[in-house]
Amino acid sequence: MKSAKAGEKASKALETKVILEPTSCTFRSAELVALMSPSGCGKSTLLDMIADVKTAPYTGTVYFNGRQRDKTFRLISSYVPQ
Image 1 (cartoon, rainbow, N blue to C red):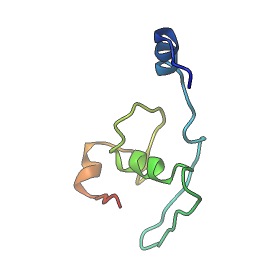
Image 2: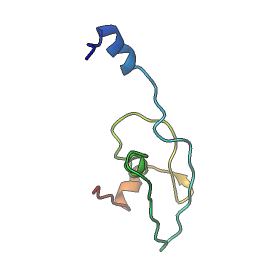
Image 3: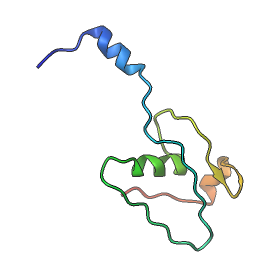
């Protein structure tokens, strides 16, 4: 097993990684939606981003009812992780 040098660790910390490719979807009222894919494909990451509970930095915009999500989003929605 190789040991990583301090410089290698620092460069990996600054590395940008695409977790989720650009995506778009619309959910209508009273519509049941299933999000299915193999393990490790980003389902939980996507749901965390939509629910505004993702702690790691990310870029992108989430719209709710046609407007950019704001602080009232959490007042009218809920998210329960598995």
